[in-house]
Image (cartoon, rainbow, N blue to C red):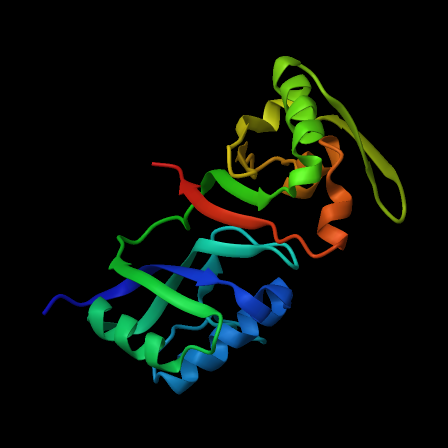
Length: 212
């Protein structure tokens, strides 16, 4: 049996669970760890916190199919046993996919993410035209509105690839930069499809790509 003190897990967050915030997701995981009797390590200091690090926060309302979280344990355990216990303690909508031992070092760094969203028949032709325009341009000025200010930036460099498949599924891949990145909702907005999110369309993060 192989044991390890540092683990990397992949999980899916879907169904009604996609409607909880990142902070609530962390609390949900902490409860799971207690129920599963996983000896999680804690930080030092006045307010110790579990050593749990998500590779990339997931926006409210977005489903995630292969999210990443790193755990540091207070004592070594078999990754397969950790996986078994967490699966047994997981609530509906939180599905553990895999668990592996990792070497000590930095937390995972995300370099790209893939998203998808269904586009209704009546909107597909306009969406395809907008997508073609966006992909053909080398720059796409975009204004991000915040409560206290507006931020202007170039959206285009963050869009690595995109397509609208024959079934009407919009798929796109985005660059993730530690110094600042665009949001998937901003790509949807640039295509004139943001109203679909308000009408119940589900944006899905299909993959989180880690840097080597």
